[in-house]
Length: 295
Image (cartoon, rainbow, N blue to C red):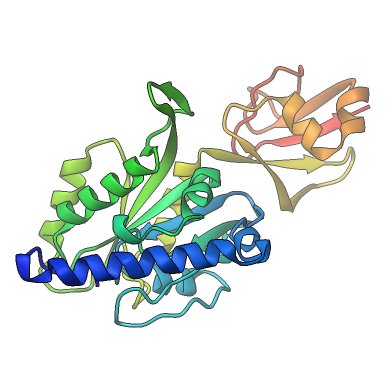
């Protein structure tokens, strides 16, 4: 109600009453046993953890339900989502954890949401193309700023009042199936420039979801490395997922601590000039590389 209520003197009393109710509810939740507070700390699973955020009725829950095994409540009215709901999204041969979150409304942000967003590897920002896209973008940016979160590729940096958490982000421009919204999508792309990538989707009808998955994978800036036992074929079923720029040493450590300690040499297929080239521990791995470790 706070999100959609018009700014008018006649609504001041109602706004104050709503804020007081929110404060009382938040306080009462904090007094409960620690189980509720702990339940909002969602362990990371899969290749990465991505928090899905947006304003009321943008289609966050519908998107998460469409691309994962999660079953968040989906409805045509705002504020349906009241808690964090995780689900696993398949992309080729890896899984990415998506977390559906409550609407990002500054006046009613859940006390635990800030930490959840800071812990996530990236943010998937859902924008409703049926509404004013720049107003939504401004509101979301302002809400994140209050939580000391900014979208960008850098790590946490010190500022005068504390640490600002920079998060990789992708915008999912939802409801591309609506008539006359292509111009809004172009306006959104133009306003963002190269700062944040944008994917056009329809959570309701499934349009653009595969392209969104690929763009999210690129945004996460991770790579997949495969292992090969000498004399056998490579195993492409369960890749090792690493941050881009990782070395052979880091990849070997992910396989097993013993491999890193006892590693004599390794052969790599994919990024070398020759197939099966011998590489050193500081060799930088590339997406799709196959490594054969020798101890």
